[in-house]
Length: 224
Image 1 (cartoon, rainbow, N blue to C red):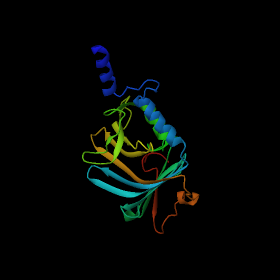
Image 2: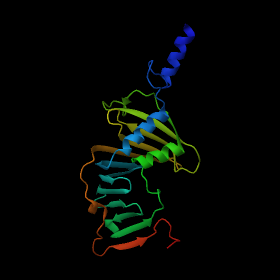
Image 3: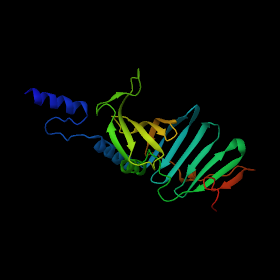
Image 4: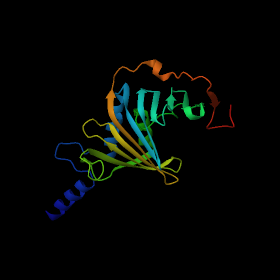
């Protein structure tokens, strides 16, 4: 009797406990459910904040599945990031510069998409931070999330560890926190999310401002 009670407590504490007749919810299965949720999204729009070291950025993100992504920043003002499935473009208004980079198929998938989540499932090992039950987003917060920790399977990944904070009601990602190989913390916060609303195709075509300069293959300067 004591051994059975101890086993039940251990299972519950490690997130592998289920009531009779229920499916055992593992971290891997939960990440799969979130990926399936994103697979049903056609368009996505919301506010985005990015914190990397001492840098803070704010903007609005637009996505049209499976390949289109645009971020219009309010800080830095008028900066734009645009991905159209074939190339990545960054507009830097202060330098009047447009940075353009061709991207291999699948290379531009971001985390907060079904494709990005499938890549995470392939390249990272998931585990619940504290268990499958919702916990506060951060100490003192009334917002509840389910926290997943993802640890890379190989040294080839840019982030050694990623924490996903997921809304238990919508199964949408609320926050992504990643630790880079240089021990820098990058945090993305998503809020005010609207799904499957009308986003025009023309939004993913960038009109170059006058007197702007184009720099191609800015990530790979040695190639054409």
